[in-house]
Image 1: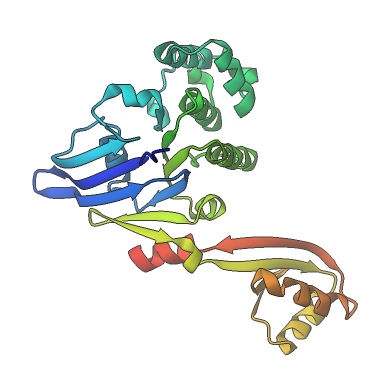
Image 2 (image 1 turned 135 degrees about the vertical axis):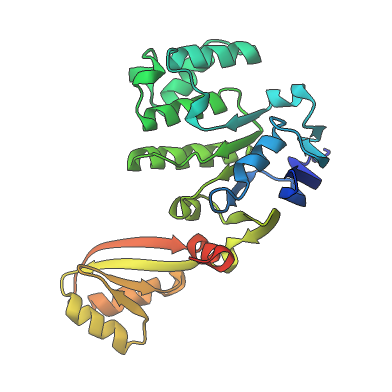
Length: 293
């Protein structure tokens, strides 16, 4: 079976007058998975996504999606692009938007109900979008973007404006898509959320793309809430652990293979672990390295 490249950029240039927003970049993504496009405001993330999806023209170079030119409109039957909520019409309902997309893709109407239930927007499907909160609009945008079961999905800031439960749902949707064979490329400023969904990061700086595997920079921390924080602090320091103290917790930076030993030191000395949470960081450190604070 021939493997089709999901995304191919070849020497792509996009400039406005003399300013090169995208400066002769090349990129190849062949597999399903999640890639995060990261950079400060105004660096060109949205411009790049718009160029890839042929919304704005490039000056030179070549872009292929699923093995086809991005100028071939038929390829977009298998591709979606989640943009910001300015594309929504306040005087239409959520159902109106989804029906239009289904009609465009010649999909059965039952697909609307499937995605509505999946993203949890049954209660406001038939309300006008002008009455939606930011989170509700984001749910609708997600529903629109997955209704055609895309093989390649671009998402411009999909993690903005989400409450904790919506963030959890978004992560589930992203992981489900990857499991189904979708390639997801998302831009985001939310570095904590990036750490939760992917290790594959593409920084954009000075018009260039820098592809990074965050595994090389990942740091794992465990946050302990304890019955006797003072004693636990002394025990761990005496055992050679690197720790940070917060008002009601101790943070220990260790690998997963050392966690059990750490727990044993605490519990064997009569200290009860009230709560334990794992935090994985990496994107913030990388961001600071490339862009400063």
